[in-house]
View 1 (tube, rainbow, N blue to C red):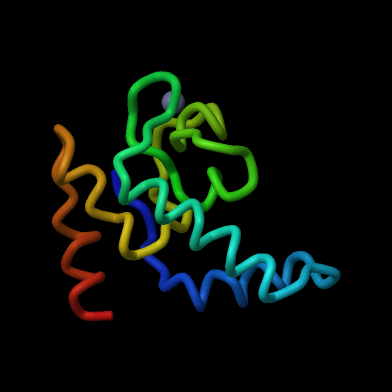
View 2: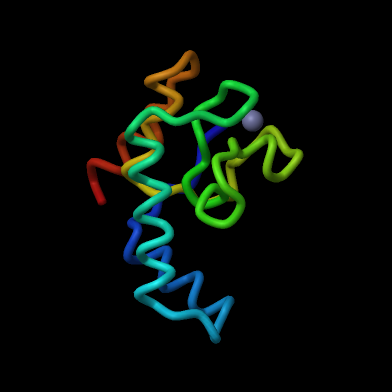
Length: 102
Ligand SMILES: [Zn+2]
């Protein structure tokens, strides 16, 4: 179980492609703010670390609460937030390795 790590800058590009009307600066600010909340230790109401990408859209939420799924293996997460599972109970060395390489 691991996210696909992606740099914030790269994810903004993915997001803009899917949402052509969006403003790049506004989108970047939104993801950056969610990442800041993650790094500040904010959590989903269920107690899990937040999923930065979903939280930028929905407010603080973990992946499971946002999507109803438990396996994020094909979903993106901002690389800086991929340490959430090693910091918590589940370790995610694949995500860490890719983050270090990227
Ligand atoms: Zn949750």
